[in-house]
Image (cartoon, rainbow, N blue to C red; front, side, top):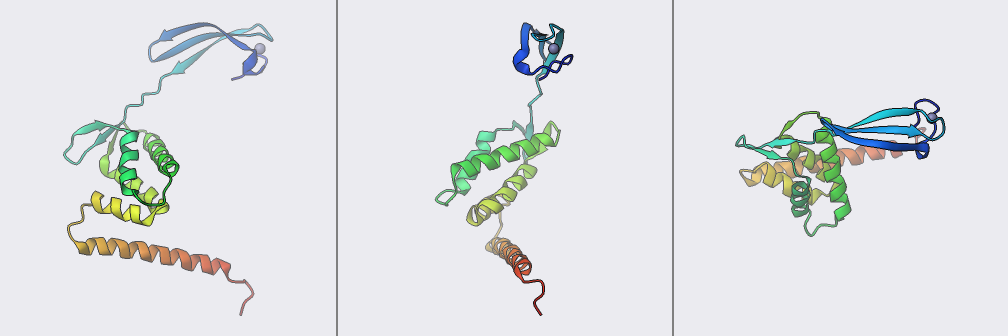
Length: 168
Ligand SMILES: [Zn+2]
């Protein structure tokens, strides 16, 4: 924050009064450099995000729960807890960025799958298998095949870029 009058940096700005108002906090401030006074408001962002479950029940979004389910998918895999924590944070941020008060649990699951896909193949398939409730082994096999296909295309693309441009 800078002084709106003389642009002095925040270490020159002193809070002289703090008051709680509806949905936020009002602070009266004084700039030590130019002695001007001004008011700032801090709004408390509404952080309520409800996840709509399959049976239409609503549940408060819980990042820890997300971390837990990803940990289960990643158990005994070479995945650091920091990577899981980071993924959960990214998912949480993306969910809030949707700007909605309710989000479908399917959407959350898709986001988890997107992240796990980049983190660990086995964890991804594990999560996907539970999440999508594979009815039989065939659909699981199809999922794995799709994954392998994707990896193969990525590899191909990589090699294309590695080819010397003037090679005949
Ligand atoms: Zn000032």
